[in-house]
Length: 400
Ligand code: AMP
Ligand code: MG
Image 1 (cartoon, helix red, strand yellow):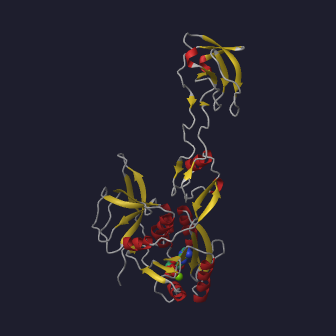
Image 2: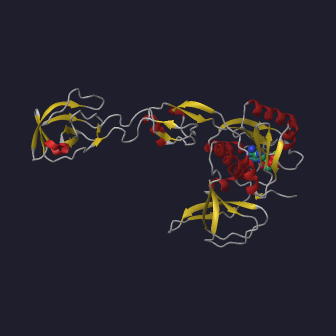
Image 3: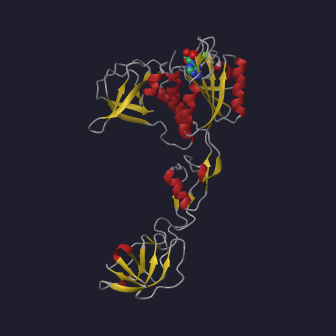
């Protein structure tokens, strides 16, 4: 039985990315979303020459000798406009963010001024333009500050608001339907019989999917029953899922029915059985426009396969050009020679004195051991047929 190399399977999956529609959202709902179009500023920022400090708007040329006495003709707090023009030997009390009155060309900061009733004494000289933020210093009306494909992170949300753009058109999130299969499964809290297993895969896979930017539809649990599985597949189609993720029932046992059901429903198989450990029984295919990813049931295998295949696909659907997120570092301990399957070793991650990232594999690597997975910081990639390697050999890993 020939197994497909991991990279080949990933490339095949990422070669045909289903396209997503767009939707317009208020900024309050747009966090983490990907802009679908360029966003231009609808304002100059600042929209007027603004004071950067509390103090007095003055003419720099007036303050030659020190101290210089100026007449205070009024005040201008932020959010107001000073109605008159400032003449020689005059000053206007001004506050941070307020428009600089006409005729003024500098701000005398209040630390360098001494107020005396209707007058103010300038104790220091000022330079023309000092503490004035010119119109459009940050950006100008029409400037395209956020390009299509940009993720709306905290800074970009604040920027869009300042640009006076309350709504943004973003890519729809990929809709991922998740179905857990297995006669033995019960939900956490359902008081399992001794022979039953608490279903955990959907919880982890859904969290990974959400982190990658997907909207999750939880199809719940289904037994190893063709009709019941087929009904759930139909439910995924009806929900308009872009991706259907199944877990369990992916091997060749009498109770592994997922692929049969999908094939009977019309799925075209992309690949099945990958040269990897854990996760060999991974399957992918297309049911009409819906991408299907069949994860193995083993809890660690399902998480590793979701990280390697589902998450990159979700990221790529949102325009991510480098969705695999492989990093490089050094081994923190020796690794034995490998066979034909690429291994993903649960490992801790730390930094040495020189700042290198050090990945140290755990001793227990059973694909049913979730506690080890949950404790791991990364998956250390151990390529097929790699010879034994000592600590501090270069390595690649994927962060968890
Ligand atoms: P399968 O791929 O159906 O042969 O399942 C392989 C192993 O994973 C079995 O021990 C199952 O009990 C276990 N398993 C399957 N699905 C889940 C799940 N959703 N949560 C936890 N364990 C599971
Ligand atoms: Mg099963």
